[in-house]
Length: 383
Ligand SMILES: Cc1ncc(COP(=O)(O)O)c(C=O)c1O
Figure 1: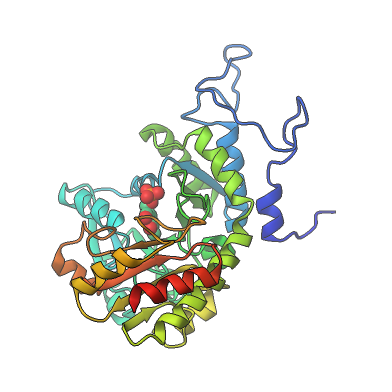
Figure 2: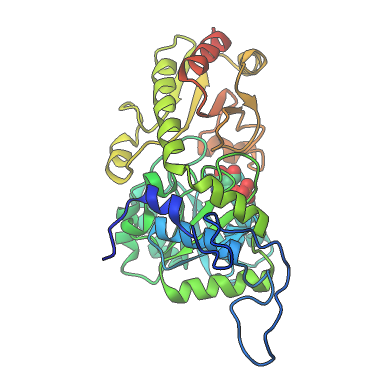
C-alpha cells in the first residue's frame, strides 16, 4: 500500500537507501564528470554529468515531488533557472513580468529584450484590469509571477491570473523562492512551471548557489532537460548534495523563520521610528487576504521603512547586531539589506520609484536564532 505521506517525510526520505552497493542510508555523492559505457550503442541514463548525474537527480526528484510537478531540472543558480525558462521564448514572443521582481530577473529580461531576443512588459500584476488589458494586447507566451514579491512582499492572486490565462496558450511561471513548497504550491493554483533560487530557503545554509525548474508536464520537463544540457546550465553534483541535505530540514526551518518574522513584524509595526512595515502576515498588509487564501504560511521575509532619510538608515545598519548586512536570504542566519543600493541596484531610480522601493526601505531575512535576541537587537538599532 502506498501511504499518502506528508511533505516533511518526503523532504527527509527521498533517495534514502538508494545505494545498492553498500546500502548507505544517505545517498552517496557522485563527483564525476563522466561515466563508463558498458558497450557502444547501448543507451544508459548516465554518460556525462552536464546531461545527467545521480546526485542531481536525487535533488530534482525530491523538489519535484514536494511541488507536485512531473519533473525538475537542477541548475547552477536561480538566474540559470530563469535563463533556462527563456529558452521557451522566440524573438517575437512576449513575457509579462512584475515591475517589482527581483533585480537580477529584471536585468535579464530587460537586457535580452534590448538585444531583440524576446519582448518584455513589466507591469503591476496586482492591477487586474491592467493585467487583463496587457494579456489581450500582447498575447504573451509567458506570464512570470513572483509572489510574494521582493522586497515589498506584494502577493498576487495566482489562481485569478491562471483563470485569465486559461483562454490562451500562455504559460504561467511562478518564482516560488520566498515561500518554498512548504508554504505555497503554485501547480495547485494553475502554474505550468515553478522555479526557485535554491540558494535561499531550499538549501537554507547560505553555502550554495543553485536553482531549479520544476515542470508540470512531461513535454515541458523534457524541453527544460534538453536546454539545460545544450546551454550548460546544470547544477553541480556537490551543490546538489548540499542542497538535498538542506532540504531535509526545510519544514522545520520554514516554521521557525515564520514564527520569528511574524513577531518582529509586530514589534516593528508598533515602533514610533518606523514608517511602514511590509509583512503579508499582518492584517494591515494590502495583500493579507490573498496571502491567507493561497499560502499556508507567510514566510520569513519582511521589509520596513524607517522614519527620516538615508542618515537614519545608515545609523541603523551601523548599530544592528546579529544581523549581517548582506544580500541574499533564506539562510538560518539573519540578514539585513538595503534594497535601493543592493539587491535592486540594477533598476534605474525611476523604475525603483515605480516599484515603490524607497531609500529608507530595509529588508530583513529573519533567521532561526533566538527570537528574543533578534527583537532586542532591532529595538536597540532603531531607537
Ligand atoms: C526571488 C528570487 N528569484 C531569483 C533569484 C536569483 O537567484 P540566484 O541568486 O540563486 O541566481 C533571487 C536572488 O536573490 C531571488 O531573490
